[in-house]
Length: 255
Image (cartoon, rainbow, N blue to C red; front, side, top):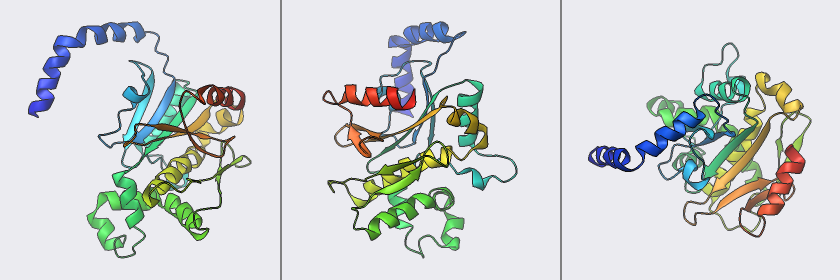
């Protein structure tokens, strides 16, 4: 707490005045660009690595950047993540949803371990909220990983896109450079796009191309950020060499 309180004092001295001015500018006309789902990991600072400013994004964080599939809510939707989707994309008319996974994700590392039946037993789930959360809402990512494992990590996976009729193909780490848990992390980020598309209140916007879903992946050890390119069918690094190509893809595919 000492460091946090001293940090608040530095904020008061250096940044508060500028930030208040920014709050005033967006108070009556906020124009957020995206709903950004990411992990609660302390190493993930999305506003910093996207250079976003006050009012630019809605940010939703949880263990493993997971968005529960709509089939978990047969009566009333009672989870923060779909509520955030409605608030951002329906009430505030935000047009882009981004899911950002990352390397060495502690939640995903734990998900990988849940393949052990004793580790994921009901007894242990009752004692561990994080195990229960992952078993309930990230198991589909693990099943996709196991499909990949059966092909010696070489064959593509198929995910549902914006509608049940639209699919996209994904090669996960085709150069085989990543740890198994990081392969699972990339799969998990893509699986969330499928989960997002399952919500009926987004159906019309997705079908009319008024709402677009994207996946990013952040390598915390190199600082590099990857975008899932549906044209390239894999996560590709965002850098000076391909930024124009990626921007063209987004403009032509999603707009």
